[in-house]
Image (cartoon, rainbow, N blue to C red; front, top):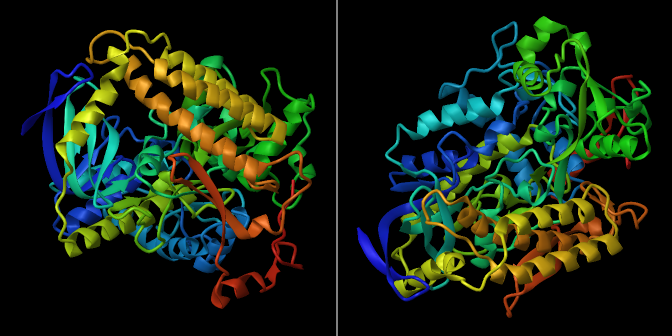
Length: 600
């Protein structure tokens, strides 16, 4: 169905109208799993993806899916996985989400296998599991080093067996509300620039993260934080937005591939980190776990080695897996071998890789109910990287893929239950649609505008690299905030030229608004958390603060439409969970310990 809306000049702008029970925004692992759940409930499902189906950032999670199957280490169980997740998150995680997650992850992995995923196998024919940083046991179910790709392949084929409608290369610009409920969205096709007004009784947000606010990142071009800002603008609460994960190992050379992910699977298979002096330095930072320490610890160690003058030729550290041998590397790390050979002319079976921390993931996001993944706005659900709570101050490697499956399913089920129990109709006043169309087209009509969206994005990335990197201080964060606010003022002067057909400048003009908003939120919340905890490492404080260890920082729009931040106390953990941390654990040397973590 076509309708007419007004553009900025008052001319009529045609737009298409579609309607679904559930609209899923994002086609990564979480979005596809949510879509399957909703379709299985007999609902009409629409899936909007900014890119192509199968091109989600999920494919960058290469090392494996964390789940306590116990196929390799039979003593593993959900309790240990829960404790590892909480300890890595420095106990500001949502413990209820972590419990649900640890208990349900094995079911979701076996379900994925039943749907056709082809995992590496143990000698007995079970799903193979490899070690990963800060996991007590070998827990990562993997497909070589292409696990995320296999997850997306399997889920894509599963979605295609449903009647879900997929809108590829389509960007959502706004969520509409009626009587306080989310009732639809406006989107446009990136190919033609045509608008689509999608009515929906519920929306599942599954758009991933926002690594593109940084200059050096493993994230592809899609990671601009559309979903978290769309949710925030609709009134949703956000949580832990100060927590950005720097993956310890990204490529550093050649410059064109700087930041490209080097999977933690390399260290899981025995890769050794060494500085330019040939020293295996992790013993100084975490002598117990060495290279398999948590990501925040290893990232700071790599960063420190370079900052203190012990870096390699191109400003990184050496990651050596040569002792594994060519045959084992090809079997277990084929993607890494191909990646370095083709992009850096390095055979990792013969010489070390050069690596350095790269922005990889965000622990914060939309605050959701652990059971249903409902946000604070009726009708809006969120799952995957765009949702916060599960990972706390630092995510364990491999937890992201099981997160997608566990909470993607729960978001789809939660949205379905909401729709099936509701009597409200989808859709909003068409004048709102017309107003949003005019706003989106404004950069074409802004004749007095002189600002390039590309240049603003580049400047923003430089600001965040300088002021919100691995190590932070109050003075630097305040300086960065001032610069971001200056960029925010310049957004009104955005100007793009040409037609709406395949116009990357226009697309960037949409993206940069999200990036600037997220950056402001990150800097403001980082100023509030005055301590060293996980990914929030304040050099102007000596360590973790006991009081701040009991709160999350919640972000929401205040009455004037400005950013409001409040500390919210974390509910006490119930006895059946808290007692797990009081039990003594026997370490590999036979001694008793309580699982103490490095405070580096």
